[in-house]
Length: 376
Image (cartoon, rainbow, N blue to C red; front, side, top):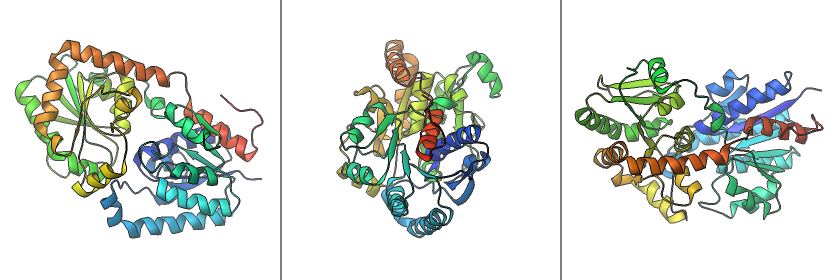
């Protein structure tokens, strides 16, 4: 009997986790058929795509692309009922995936939810909805477990899959050389985000910060890491070095990082480089988010630490002057810098020893009846 898994990842970071999981599933069961919603990274791992990821973030931005989302959902339903996978794996993207889970449950298809929606931040009532629909939960942040166990849903902290990508070897000098940089001069990394709308929203900030760094520290090398396929719409000055698919390496050889809120903040923390977090979305999306959410912080670094470890600059504060000021503080104030690094090391310890893709693949096998003994 053929083995089938459907994976639904709605945006860039989730698509990366889907790609890592797909690779592990293929390694465990070479004859497996994997299909679903994703991007080029999942496709490169042998996944048959029925629709692409959306790259859309923000309430207003989602409303603008409602027709596209509905069309994708129709394709997902057709694939679900037509192929009847042994397991449906949902990765974050809550509104879409919860709706898809309802279809899968009615069809009797086992559901694994991998990467929890941020129920601890807003709409906590979704926990009960999710618990009523899915069979297993695999979460990537340790404090999320209690939310689902209290609702009676089997849940396990499997670790964060971004850690699997971080395999830094060599010295800072060798990393700089590999990135085409001068190994003797310091580096600052500026991360605008991975989604097209994020890059567009943050482009002027990135350019402004880069100009200020270049004027104050003429020998400082400025690196902007992007994922393949991402582009800037404006021409960049020669002193900005754009590198592709080398984010961890760029972070590891940097003295300081300015990074948009999201998974990249955790990646920066695990690498151990001090940072400032900034983010800008449409004013209406930000206002609605402030009304609906209950969290004190937006960066995973501060959320996991339970305190302000890194500065968060949002909306009007997310400007070149304030981002540059914080970068300067990190570079020049050794006490501030070392205190931040110490807190980042504590976050790295939370993720040590976990193999999320291997563990989640094993859970899939358990749910489908393909393996008798779980791989821990």
